[in-house]
Length: 178
Image (cartoon, rainbow, N blue to C red):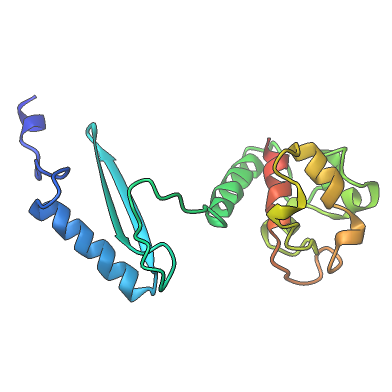
């Protein structure tokens, strides 16, 4: 209890405190250094949450990043998907080189025989980047998405032959994990 009350920085949450100002300046400096127009940072520690926002939503707009600004997660989830997939491989639950059709019977038959998890994780599956969000996917189940979009006719390359960035491949890897 005594150690808990003697926090290094007891005023993290207070705007204008030296700790808060230092955190804001560090985030601003990193954003400038990496040419990021705006950023948010939230830290939760010992029951306290502090949030810092810097910059603008989109370069040149002047619209500030605020506490409730929602940023799209985009490709950040690919790291998590690949990590979980490789844990399943290490545990022997799935095989990196096994045809995906063995795990996902809804896959088009020929594609299910050729495509494997290694292809998906290394962007060598030959799949297109994926349909954009305006193509009516919002209400689609993952199974329906796979049936509709993971098809041989949508391949841009033969699986395993070359690199082609594919969000669709990671959607499929996520479905496999489920």
